[in-house]
Image 1 (spheres, rainbow, N blue to C red):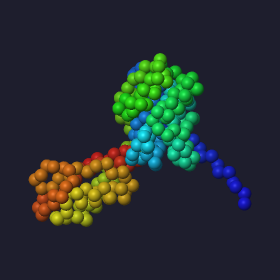
Image 2: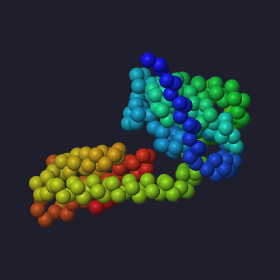
Image 3: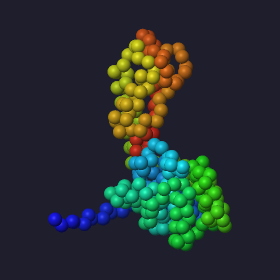
Image 4: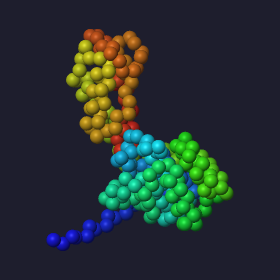
Length: 259
């Protein structure tokens, strides 16, 4: 039997406005962006999220750390540093970045690989923007040691401003996320009644959101005159007002509503 070579999947288009990001980086005095938060890496890669580290980050004695390298004005020199378990996802859905290294296993070696790429590509790294709240201490120390002549700046607000202007497809995802949360809430209310505990309502809503393809984020709920919004064994009594306040994540976009 002949082994037919699989055709290489086409590299997708860049999913965000590079010109806008370049302008925001220039205004903030940043030459090179290193994004490490899962939500912003997902955005910058057009939806990619590690299936192995979708929920938890801990692995052995270290943690998962994705690194998106973006040099101002040079998207053709961007790179993604991912975990070795992301290799399978890269094979079926290639990243838009010209360089994609899926061989890291923790926070420090991911940072070391990013530093090595910056040096190899000859990228300007005088002023590096990082997401300070999402950069582990060991990774930050590795970055400072590996690029001692670089100034480290916080780029969280740069990415917030980039993402504040939504594309039509993003608005559609937000709308769908909201619709799915409402559908889940209505399903819970229709299937339950007096005698149900707040904990049972909480778990029921979790299942309804997950069954609709969402990642359940939270549920704050009240019953009767109590303002305590945590799940508990308190019962929904006849005549009680029930309040469900929940957020569900749909492909990186949150539907957050109260009913």
